[in-house]
Figure 1 (cartoon, rainbow, N blue to C red):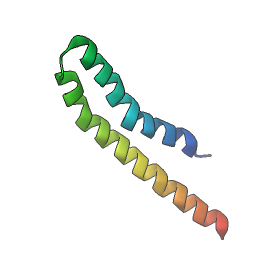
Figure 2 (cartoon, rainbow, N blue to C red; figure 1 turned 30 degrees about the horizontal axis):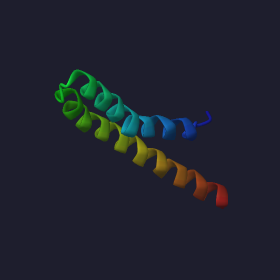
Figure 3 (spheres, rainbow, N blue to C red; figure 1 turned 90 degrees about the vertical axis):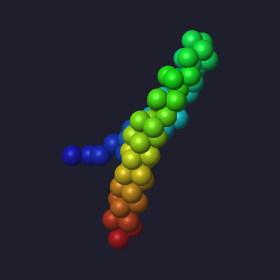
Figure 4 (cartoon, one colour; figure 1 turned 60 degrees about the vertical axis):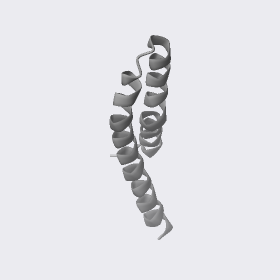
Length: 67
């Protein structure tokens, strides 16, 4: 089975950057900042976890291909 690491990287970056931007815009338009504040922790948790695991897997596959 082929791993799609580019897609995993894009999804983790979207989770890390895109979700807070969406909730920032939502908070600005509704003037309710709880949307933004309550979205930061889950977005950072999911985004950083996905990003770290993806980058780690990319390094592993790069090392295997170099041998």
